Amino acid sequence: MRHLAGRGVQDQRVLTAMRWAPREWFLPPHLAGDAYTDGPLPIGSGQTISQPYVVALMTERLQPGRTDRILEIGTGSGYQTAILAYLASGGTVFTVERLPDLLVEAEERFRRLGLTNIVTRLGDGAAGWSDEAPFDGIIVAAAAPRVPEPLTKQPARVFRGILMLGAHVSSQGGVPSAPARGAALQADVIQLFTKTPNQWREPTIAADVIERFHSEVRRHGLEAVVAHDSYLINLASPDPVLRARSIESFRSELTRSRSLGLRAVVSHPGNYIDDRAAGLERNADGYAECLASVPGDLDVWIEGTAGSGTALGARFEELRDLRNALPDQIRTRVGFCLDTAHLHAVGYDLARVEAVWEAFDRVIGFDLLKCLHLNDSRAAAGSRVDRHEWIGEGQIGPEPFRRIMRDSRLAGVVKIIETPKRDDPLRHDRRMLRRLRAYARGNTRALAGV
Ligand SMILES: [Zn+2]
Ligand SMILES: [Zn+2]
Image (cartoon, rainbow, N blue to C red; front, side):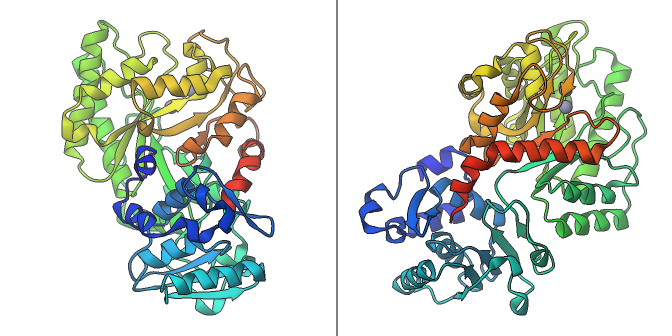
């Protein structure tokens, strides 16, 4: 459990359920000794049981309520089912399994555990379970490339998978139009601008627009939506007029993002212009002031920059210092976003990407890595020049992205592409996400076999 908590599983209810479920009961007897190792294990019929971390992660994402009705596609060993049934003790877990042998064994385990709130069905999960719909949540094995169409009509919340992969999408036509653009890409997550990013104009969002946005996010089963702040904001500026304007603008960004129910605002640190240390302090004060005046669940993820000119936050040490300069109660709302093209520009060697994560872990702490911007780069390593390129087609090349997509420690990290959209955003973004999913596939299949 310490291991799970160390990797960012924080929900105490989930940890309690994981502690309760005797994982060794869900394995063939000869593998019982390996029950708590960190890897998927075979359970017969070519299927696997996911490692505890993935089960915890999926459960945490679904957030089952005590009286929820939950549909699970793919019973497998029944381990995930049992944990859901424990958490939804006053509700019901409906679970569908294609393979009769697995289902019989799983049912036997539910009996032994005294779980009476599980309803099983032998069959193809792709059709869902329409006579029991709607559900409060649906959990689908991560191997499924997308949620089967019938399922999208049955739930209130769909848990789609564990890739947490998506794109920056346009909000043209208003923010409620963005979720559908994400769905067209089969994205799990999207990033958007809540306003025109190169203008100071700060629109407020009307209540009916917020309502429409929420229902679109639900309808398309997005796991997370994040905003990216405006390009004009410079909280580190020594110019009092520009800084005051930046604070006003960032505060408005937080207010809009909170009312839209977004997970976080991704924010570029500013340019210090005159003095680095003074600029860092101004930047931290700006974050502190704005976050304090917009309380709530909304987080800020500070993005590592390419470090051109006087940009702050290129190196992990400086990102750490920026966060450390925040008051205690504000700091807990601040995590980080790293952009592969920026890391490359700064001179972090992505050919040894694990070493980059190690450095981040040592300086900042891995659990504070919340988001990745996945972009290849046209610029030379260490050039401090930021030129995004299609994945695998630039100076970074495919291998680091392959490793990133297969790293289970990054499973819960939001991953957003900001690659060139050229003449046809839908086509190119689709192509890039398809490519990244293909990179992930080897591992994801193993992770998925709950
Ligand atoms: Zn950015
Ligand atoms: Zn960039």
